[in-house]
Amino acid sequence: MSYILDALKRNASDAEVGDVPSLHTQAGVDKPAKRSRWLQPALAVVLVLATAILSYWLQPWNRQPAAAEVIIADAPEPEIKVLGTVDYSRFKPRSPVVLTPEPESDPVAQPLPQQPINAGIANGEQEALVEAPPATNDDQRLGGDELAALFRKAVQETEQVAPQQQNAAATAEVEPLTRKSQAFQNQVPTMEFSAHSYSSDPSKRMVKVNGSEIQEGDWINDSVQIVAILPNKVVMEMQGQRFSLPALSDW
Picture 1 (cartoon, rainbow, N blue to C red):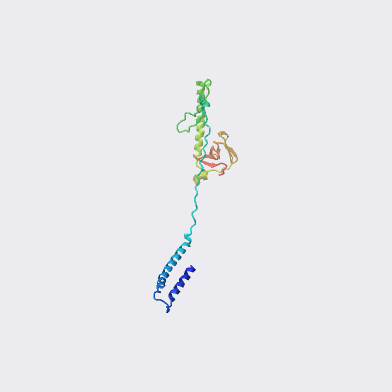
Picture 2: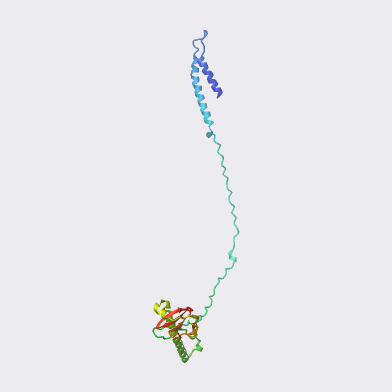
């Protein structure tokens, strides 16, 4: 580049100075001057083109690395080995398995559930259930007389239980003495309970009032009668009105 510029500068200076005509200069010496006129623009154009080509070539985006050569290697074909065949004709087929059904067991006769016998009770009374006697085998069946005796016994037990249940139901709904009128409460005598004994047998029930042992049906001061002795209270009657007091409570 520097050599080209120096040459252009020398040509320019020579063109400005020119050749000084002398006495020995001939009239036909103007050809070099004509040549220098078109030489300078030509050199300038060449210089510009060379500069443009060089600058374009030196740009970083034009200097691309050479494309790498792609080598495609052929994959080896897999080797297929054929194994030996098996001759199944040498094996004997197995006999099918036969499942024999299990013998059905004979059904066992289940004993019938014992049903309670409802003995005849008059209307309005609570029904008492008496369990029937256990079933017996065919060779131990009861005769007609024995069955009749058992039936009469069941009826008698029912007649004994029914009044007790009715009495218990009636006494359970008796109004407490504290809910009676004040005039009625003032007429009830003083009562101090110090013992209370209840039993399923009515003859063994007892309370101790004012130091005396009293059972059901007895009287207190000839004015109050003990009607029933229950597990948690005592039912009494005075002037035709029944009332109750809690067990071991004083009045």
